[in-house]
Figure 1: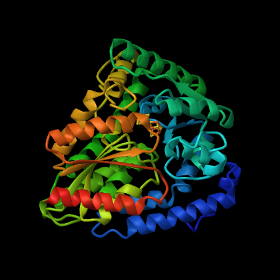
Figure 2: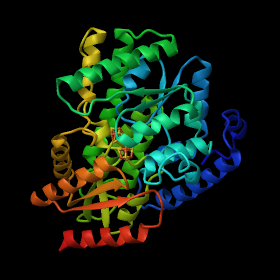
Figure 3: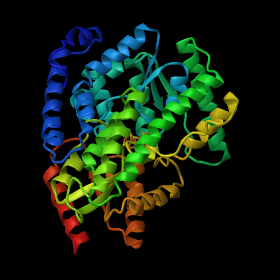
Figure 4: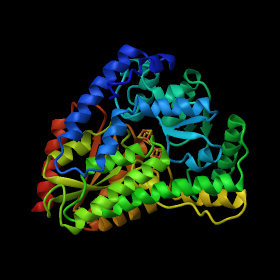
Length: 429
Ligand code: BJ8
């Protein structure tokens, strides 16, 4: 997936990538992207921008990061939506999500991690050990976080493998003590960024950064609300792709591109047009994050007579809802606004986490979903355990739900297809 006209190999060599392994990875990704995305019918024209971004995901965007580094900007790689992009932008840094959405070098990863570790964590290691992630290699600081037990312990193992791993502590409960902890951690992280970048955060720089990220979130929220139309104006696969690119792209360019798609979708909706006919079964997908290029389950769902109308996920509404209050006039006040916004993320690592079920119901109702697919990665205790209670709760509320537990392999694709097909039939009966 790179522009054939430009030879990025010297750049990748400079980053220490294993070129043969990287070529093999890009070959597989490129084919998957063509099969999954380019074969869709009635895509919005604005998705051409996202096709371009994906075609250059290891090319032009990496060059932009390296050009930024030459100008003295720092690249901050992250694995969790709890890392505030506002703070990174306030020191003129660039934040990127790190690759964790495909099986790669799993045998190597399993020499360091138990087999019964979730695919997302194994993937993080596989991409590092296989030397195929230019984002990771371009990062000046890699930020881990104290979230689930798997990640927490995996960062101890990852630490000697990457230069500059910084682990942020996160609360697991949302009372006053939890809020205090998050604020302390965000201030510590801001100091770390200031030291790394040699830049002091000012009220002006932080306000400007908040405005950029709020605009980016507002654009994806606008897109999410347009998906409530019937017929759905955009496929779930394309909706997910936008949510995935959210973590990689230049934020201002991303915002403009999403708003452009929204303008187009508004015209589509006014004309009564959509990607599938009105009345197609509408599904909400809820659960573990789907990092690039984890498209397996949405591809299966939309290959059937169904359309995905929302993602209750960190790569989706859980990660992008809300806004930071930009009105305070002190750094402390602005940090409070950041803490308040991020503390609303209802990740399953929190206990209790009742607001997540309310949030799922709210999205299901707004997006006019006919049912909810509770998506969980094998061995992910926080989401798999929550899913059992949520399934019962949703069914009790009259919202059909099904739990799908899977990994990044294709081995269970036929079985998932059969189960989703039966679920759609149950909804339609
Ligand atoms: S805020 S969801 S991005 S931690 S799938 S590694 S939970 S065992 S990813 Fe997450 Fe931040 Fe929460 Fe969001 Fe562990 Fe589960 Fe694996 Fe997971």
